[in-house]
Image (cartoon, rainbow, N blue to C red; front, side):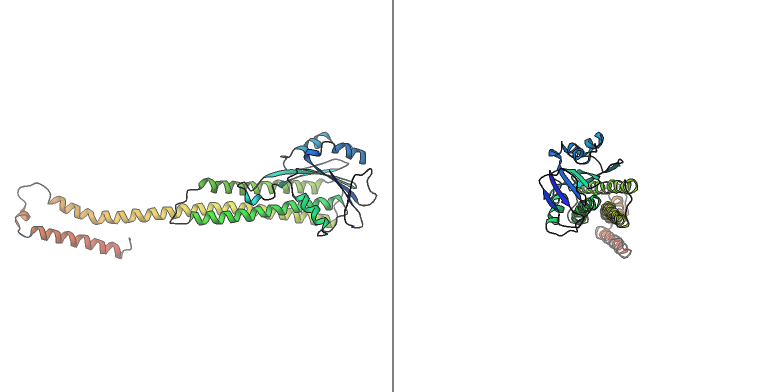
Length: 324
């Protein structure tokens, strides 16, 4: 567990060894990783005198809990799906998530998350480097963390688009037939998963905005709207990637069909040329005793000439008509 004190005057957050009471100004942030969070409800009850609902405690320990909002008269609970691990671009599965639970009290914020959720470390590091504006309310800090978690989804979009470009080049390469259909369908599945995750996160935020305990200020409403629009853009990206994959597959099959049609057309032209030649040779290959041309001294050469004229004439005709 890590404890931080955020003062209302916007001073740099202070790391504390522990806390016996809540500050009159500003708020405390108790940050727990899930493996060490078994006693967090007792710490909250000691600081606030409020007993956290048992179902909410169970939800906080569930790393696979979908994004969700619920609240009581004493606190708000927000669960948000975050990406893990940090270097997701180097893995086959880009989207691996663990939930983070936030409990917002008066002058107190409690967070429970997986140790692999690096967004919390990113926020703490930026606070230490004074790269972020120091929030004065639990809502402000939750917004900063959620915004950081949503930003990490953007890296997924970039990586999916890079992989899609590579797969599209392979799909439309006429020299190398595409065979990696499993990988293509896997990327489409991940794009769909990204869209669903962003939709769940957005629903949780919208529910929080409607049902939170206190009234939202104008600045808080703007922040939540910005975060919601960010998630909407990510949803649109996920949907666009799925459509791009479908279009690439359609182009691939259209190209294969066109190539097949050209081959069939060429074979049809050749069949049309050789059909009359086969007919002529078939006639003179019949075993009738009385065939007048068989007595002609130059009949063989004459028939060869007829075959050349018929075949060449048909070849020129089909060539001018653009059949090949």
